[in-house]
Amino acid sequence: DIQMTQSPSSLSASVGDRVTITCRASQGISNYLAWYQQKPGKVPDLLIYGASTLQSGVPSRFSGSGSGTDFTLTISSLQPEDVATYYCQKYNSAPLAFGPGTKVDFK
Amino acid sequence: EVQLLESGGGLVQPGGSLRLSCAASGFTFGSYALSWVRQAPGKGLEWVSVVSGSGARIHYADSVKGRFTISRDNSKNTLYLEMKSLRAEDTAVYYCAKARSEVVAAAYNYWGQGTLVTVSS
Image (cartoon, rainbow over all chains, first blue to last red; front, top):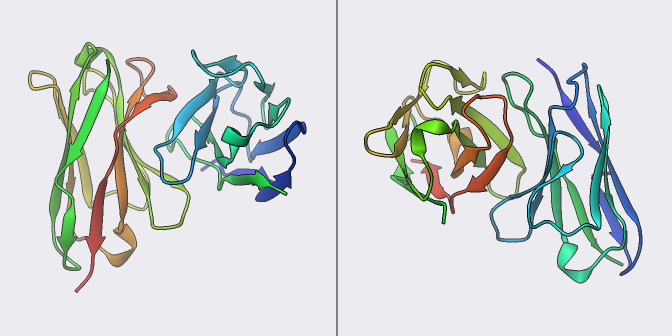
């Protein structure tokens, strides 16, 4: 099975900072990669699918890139409401595994 | 408005069984794949199972294969997860999630609020 890893596992940043989270698949998955945001005590929300397509209603400060095995989620200017754990997920074929998550908070 | 409402969670002894349901509304039910995703207390998301819109395609995580059965009733707009031989490590909030398309290879654009399953003696 394809394994998903994320780095870093956690990060602290300031309001306005540019934040980058990396997701890596152990084998190529083309662009079958989604990013989710889960705020504390809340249900996960889809941010990006197809590695780079922004889900409707998601602020444009979020962007995704990559293909194959290496992917990136970027928050161009971190806002207070972005405190959350971010997960990547592969969905090219079963098992549709999630990455372990990256927790983002403020310094 | 898309709504997914899980039910059926609760406390069960190790080795026991439980059936989860997810009642859906606000979309053409049979046109979308549906999945179960779980989250153990304080842990990350774990994909459990998925069924295509027609019900023809089904997949399971290795951790639940042979113990859990996913099914859907497109006439009742309801998704199910039959869980048997439950273990302590199955303790989690179980989310029902709607895929963006009929096929299983799709991201999840709507999630239910989840139902808690606790496996303990």
